[in-house]
Length: 98
Length: 432
Image (cartoon, rainbow over all chains, first blue to last red; front, side, top):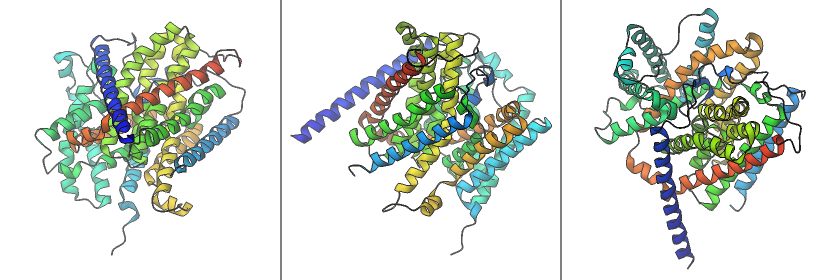
């Protein structure tokens, strides 16, 4: 009984994934063929995967675009604390129910 | 048994090559010498294609080949490989990589698809039709090229970007990212029961951090299979094209405004190029906000890859691994990647300034790209279609990506709404 349910769920997943795959490929192809979503004056798009691949990337984000009164060390501290807490959570979740 | 020399492992060779490239980049940027790696300019039609092979271009291409061939063959020698056999195979691999880069520089294609797509396609086509000649096989070393490229890439991961958007940026980029990764880890390993942990973490970081570059780094850190990386990157590439176009449309339809819309795009669209273009579709403020958030996500690659390496290293073997065991087993190229990032952020940038670091990265970026193109072409050459079909696992990887990306969008939207709607916190002032 349980196996039958699992089979049905797996088949459902397969069909859903197949539909999503076909739809997304067709949609991506349609977008590319019709040159949709590109910006005039920008010679790149999704093909530039990393910031260093974009020519003169700094013109898009000046270091002083936003200025905060909060000291850098506070931001670094929160960054590291949150990262450490999330790492512990990941390890805990991974170890649970094993 | 003769003990192995410290430099003979693949990771050590990658670290040595990476730092030689970085040192060369620093010297060249200081002296102003010409060391730039060859890069095809965008072309449309046969007439523009033929210009790509003018005298100057051929000279630059020959220099790029010489630099990469000497470096990677020297690395092969360090690893104890047969250098003559490696070099023979490398010549063929480099020629294939030139074809990949030429095709991916086509004007329309380059604006939507990354070279990774073409590298996989051409590699797979060769390996599944005519087959890979035996003399090429010694140079088909995916991990070697990836690890070297990653150490070079480390220099462009600047920690100072963390403060770019103050606590707003930290909340949008850093609060959400690990939660999405953990959610996708749980969903992939426990709900979908995918029996391939490295693949789950590779696709989770591609979704939540920044697409291809994060996938490359975490795949190497978790020792994922080549087919894991190629599948994660392929899925990310297709959906990045769709999200780049649809997200600005939906954001305008919802009336979110440029500030919140830009932040949402920066936090959810995978590739940096797509983020910039999609943000631009909203307006100047949308563009700046999107790029500010993405610039924070770009530096997360180093931390995530390090955490993934420690996590997977400590799970290996029986029982809890001690700190010294983790240190011994830790893939050492991650340390090279992190060290390069620390040196750029805390030594070179404070002493010589951000414009200098940018000029070094401009030089190094193309060498890094060549290393990654060699890697992805190698993946294609060493993968067969049956392997890829098995990898698809009844559609579960695609379901994992879609559900994870939806979760990423919903959570990022919630955080963006809380911090940037002006209802709970004062709105940030962003210079445009």
